[in-house]
Image (tube, rainbow, N blue to C red):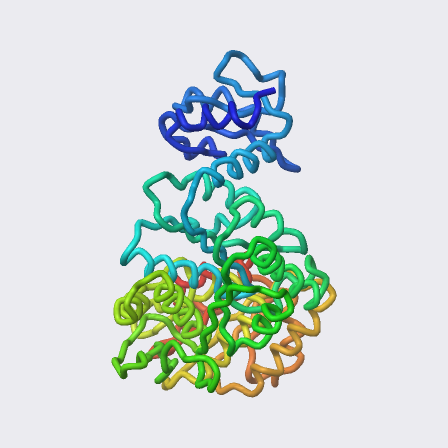
Length: 435
């Protein structure tokens, strides 16, 4: 078995790390991982044939020569290698988590800090027990600040990830109703997300706290953090605001404290909060306010996150990357406040809510009943609980997407603003070609 220090020497000879034979670059280090339905040890020779310099395997039977680096467990070796590499990097690591807005906030922070520093941020959604180690291992000596997004489905996940990336600074976007099944309810969500604060407190590190967000403020106070950078997103007598929100529909328009006006490409008050976090973190790291504000205003979302897409005479707000009760409520409320002649919502099931799923979808139906939409299209078996709260003349319900697709083909809409939102597993971006 190769030691971590010797494995690190091999890693330094390589051009990067890959766990996917479909994405191997020349001279990569390939790490074979195992799961319930796959075992990548069997692809080690293929990885070498495709250009990998070494392969990390945990099955002695596949070892053929010195290019095969045998370890006890492939995933553990990947994580230990990342920890070893992290300790060689003497740069700020900004770690962030939260129930909603993690990826957008990560992108905004990166956009701001990149105005002054060479940064590296989590790519895509590589924010779990595999993605975070890969992110850390992708950071080389040229990087001046790292931004690490951390996702969690249950208690203990964030603790595992902070021990790998060792953040020097941290931020929690919010505490909301996400992954309730895995966390065991809201108390579990709060405890799980709080594991970031636990690490920062134990290692005397810095946390950024929006005092307007009472749950995260209360948690920061409870954890006994000594280095707190507090800011406000609404008028506050004790803590200065970062910026002033002028309007949040259709796009966020805000002013800095000097009165300069900025128009963004993001919609909703929740995204104004995300933008303020990026601005404040940028200021902390030495950027002037105007540069930070200009950077967040210029940011254009993609990947189906709060993304406006023009489709003929229609304007579609694609927010189909994920959904939970907190983010769904915010998106619907914001869309309801949007000024438009005609509005339609296409909403899909919210997953990972466990026993709370019926009640949360029922509450969603009650919210929709208070809104002024021309069309309400609901899809998925869980949405049946929402349908029961709505007058039949106000809703079109489809247990699965095939029926939804047929309806959209048979009922073309024009000059309409359309919100599309659902959990990732629903794949509601499939409706875009039909609008």
